[in-house]
Image (cartoon, rainbow, N blue to C red; front, top):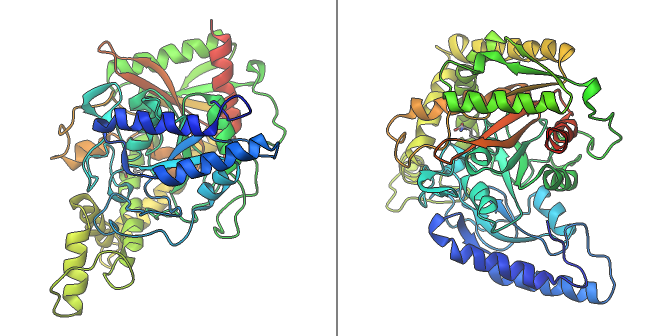
Length: 463
Ligand code: GLN
């Protein structure tokens, strides 16, 4: 990415990004722009450069945040009516760290309301279009972030990944997406979805750019007690092929996976072999239960997190309320999208006393078995390879009437979240009709940078 210096003005970088955002307005990548503040910041950085002052590693680089990150000036909506007029009272740690390095937030990107979805069609403000085909979805829930990077509006954007929301839109738009180890990046100042699964990461155009941004936003934060000590930028054992063994998850090469996608996974595996890695297939039968586990645990946590939107403390409050019940009922009815409500209902059902053991408890036990299966696999393999999503981007409206079809999108992406593992989405090819297809490398906890290094190595040495 281009960093401002004596010859490259921050103001020009920011202006170019704002112009492009306007040019591609019909893709609906953004919910709101931050034009005036962005230009002010750019001028300030140019002045500091002119004076020879230190300006940070991302001086003058324009970027977008998913609109579930809180950041000063303007409204954080989480693409919901509930928060459509909610001025951010605080700044998310990740945003504060980027701004401290001179990066300049130009706008808030579109998402599925509260990050519930796989297509950005659940946004209260309408969907984002795919950067490669306007009739198709951008993926989700960080669809606005991914399309903004793919269209070249910004060199990187922040996203959140609870079950694939960084990787799947990255893959649908042909760009890179990093879902880090759980606890790598502070969740402080980001609207909570499902707290044991939520991770903050970024979307960018190369492994190098992802590495740079993640190295800045990672690290311990006293405001999020689940954050890990900073393990980014430590001395790594190298990612050299002779040491590394990769397992292709065999269970995800056939059932429910488009043959064009499987072909892309296998051709990426070939590239890995050419680059010198040892690659073989591994069978992990428990993987097929991932989706069922996720769609019990995640709604349970969503139902708990969304209970705070009661029409009293903050956000939308319905008009013409007559009593306490109608404050809650009408406000939540008006403020939430149908998909939010579906998750609240499922979540409360699986947590209810009559069904808790049958669903929630069982799902937690299965989650432990899944984690054990990964641990076992990582005794033999350094990383695992599979596709990000079962097929390339689908048409707008194709799955909106069928939530289960939409959930099937997430069959391969939710697994890393359930186990707290890092996973990087890599653009790996395209379908016959020219739609991007992504693969993902999943590794043991804290191997985030190793995964990125492997991907870089494959690009450099597979020819
Ligand atoms: N598509 C998944 C879901 O709808 C993941 C969402 C996310 O990662 N925020 O739950």
